[in-house]
Length: 172
Length: 444
Ligand code: FES
Ligand SMILES: [Fe+2]
Image 1: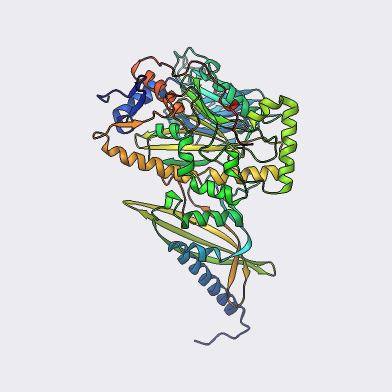
Image 2: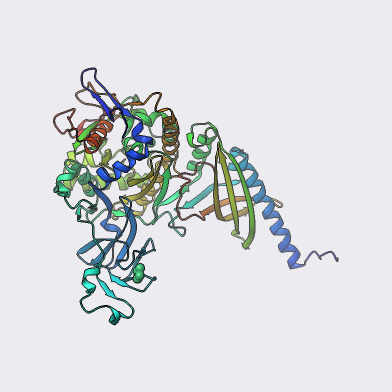
C-alpha cells in the first residue's frame, strides 16, 4: 500500500471526513452522557437548533409548526433546565445511547461546511425502551485546526408520529 | 362497572372525589365509547385546514376514520373514510387535494361529496343495483361554529352544536375574533401520546394549580427573558385569573390583560425585540378600535378552555393551541395538537408567536413533556387504586369565585361525565355563568 500524497484530493477528503466524524462522535458522547454544558460549548454564539414536526419534515419556523426552534437563549434555557433537574420528563435522567453513521460532507467553502449524518438514539427508562431514528444536517464553522463549531443543526426524526414515545426532553 | 360511585360530590363538607377505577378499568372505557364518544359533539377540524376546493385531511374522530374535505367554495363535508364495497380504508394519505378518491382494492372511486362515481366493470352489477345507494356514509350530524367543525355520531342527538357548546361559544369568539379574516391552522401538527387515561388530559389542560411546580422550568425561562413574572400574575402566589362553568361539562380558566399592550400578555416571555413590542402594540390598537377596550383586554389575556369531552383550546396570549385526544386503551391516549394564529400579523410578530408557542407546547417544548411525564406517573400510581380509590378535586369548592388554581373546572368535567355514565343529573356548583377573565389580574 502506498502512502497518499499530501495534495491527493481523495486523501484530503478522507482527512476532512475523519475530522468531522471525530467532532460528531464527540458531540454524541457529550449528549449521551448528559454533559450538556460542554455540549453547549460546541456551538457558535449565534445559533439555530431546529427539529421539525414529524408530519412536516421539510418544515420551516416561519410557516410551520415545528417541534423545536431554539436560538442561543432558548437552547441555554433548555440545557439549564435539564441540568438543574426541573425538566421532570428527564428527571431522573434516562439512559441514552446513540449510534451514528453515514456522515457526509456535502459542501465545504468559505461559509463553512454542510454535513449530514444518520443516527439512532436508544432511550431506556425503567422497563421502557424507546427508539428514535433520525437524520441531521449541520452547518459547521471551522474553529482552529481539525475542530469545528455548530452554527446550525437541524434534526429530522424518521418517525411519522411521536407515538408511542409521546415526548422528547433529552437532546437530539 | 366499578362498585364504588364514580364521583363523590359532597356539598356539605364540602369535598369532591373521583374514583380512580375510571382511569384503569377496561369495562369503563367500553362504556365511555358508547355513552360519551358516541353521544357528544366531537371536534373534527378547523375550516382553515381546507383552503382549496377538494383539499382533504384524514383523521380519526371518536375512534372512527373520517375524511374532512371541501367539495366546493362553500361546502365542507365530513365523510366516513371507508370504502362501501368491502370496507377498506379509502384515503390513506394524511392530507392532499383531489377530486376523486380511489380504493385500490377493486378500484371504486368516490368524489369529495362522497358519491360513488365509477368502478371497473360496472356493467356486471345486477339491474336493480344502484351506485347511488353506495355513497360514503356521513356522521348523522355535522356542524361548525366560527371555523371549528364538529360531528356527532348519535343520530338521536337533538341538541344543536350551538346549544351543545353553551357558553363555550363566548370563549371560541375570543379566539376567532383575533383575525379579521379567519384564524389559521399552521402546517404541521404535533402527533403525540401519553401513557395516561384521557380524562387526565382534560383535567390537566385547564389546571392552573400545577403551573408553578410542574412548569417551574418554563417559568425560569420567562424570568430569564427579562419578564417580571410576579408582577404579571399579581404577586406570584399563583397564576391569577378565575375559573368558570360554561355549561354542559365545558369549563375555562382565564384572565384579562390590562397592560394596554405595554408588555406581552399571559405566559409569554419578554418581547423578542423592540420591533415585536411595537407591532404588538399596533395590533392591540387595531383590536381595541374594532372591539373596544374590554373585549380587547379579554382577547389579549389568556384562557384554557375544555370543551367536553376532548377538545381543548389553550390561548395564552403568546400563542394558541387546539388539541384533541382519544383513548386507545384505559392507560394510553393519542393526542393531536395544532397551532392557530391570525394570518395577518407581521412577520416579526408571527416569528415570535411561533417561537413562543414552542417554548411552552409541543412534545419537545419546555412544558408539555413535563405534563406527559406527570400524567403517565399518575397512571402508574393508579395501580394502587383498590387501596386508595380516590383522587381529590376539592380546591375552591367553598369559594364564590374559584380561581384558575382551584379545581372547579375539573369538577364541571366530572359531573357531566358522571351524568352521561350513570344518568345522575348534574347539580351545578355555582349558579350563574361568570365571565372569568373579566376578573382583573391585580398586577399591572
Ligand atoms: S373494498 Fe374498496 S373497491 Fe373493493
Ligand atoms: Fe401543564
